[in-house]
Image (cartoon, rainbow, N blue to C red; front, side):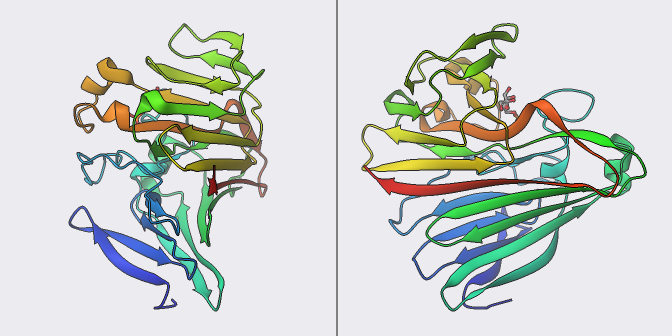
Length: 287
Ligand code: TA6
């Protein structure tokens, strides 16, 4: 491990984590628990991600904020909410960096007795980070089972915003959407700038691979690019929902918006031996 750019650390008291540094001045933090990115600070020194001050950092519970991984199920269903990837302990697979190259780390989750008790398929999942002046994450799922399986996946990214009422999300105009707060009704996005002024929980199906998050009071644009993820989920619990989420502090809904690249509407099918790769890149652009 290159000591100059990857440093082992702890989060929440006892959870192992890695801090990644890059010569561009950017840095990020990822916990082995859940392979969850907890922080991304680009060269401008301003945190991109929201991490709840009430995150529990307890095994068996998801950390609230950063980029929770969703696999093999999105949302509620036969498995725990959003699947088990974010509450499993991952292993360090590889790391690299230095000499101007991106600082990179790959974590691995192999099916185990715990996952098999929930989801009867063997798999390997690799989650890779590549940090330069941008943060690129890659999720690779390999079917090592003797039969095909289908799965949903997402990077459930919490973006830190000065105030939710200043937020505009560009790039979703004309995209068909399913509204989870309106009995999964379908419609088409008619706004060039999606704003948030009430609870929102909707998936934009087959969304463009590039969307932008703009906050009126910010001098930067957060650019979110994806490949291998078909959909984009937008979620904010608003005030009422915030109160029902114990690991959010009062008023936290005003300080984040989730924009999630994912495979939600049409699960991915893998035959034995087949692999699927999904990539998301978060970058900061001047306005
Ligand atoms: O991505 C939106 C969503 O599915 C919402 O319905 C809400 O449940 C959110 O995820 C958070 O889920 P979590 O299990 O992390 O509390």
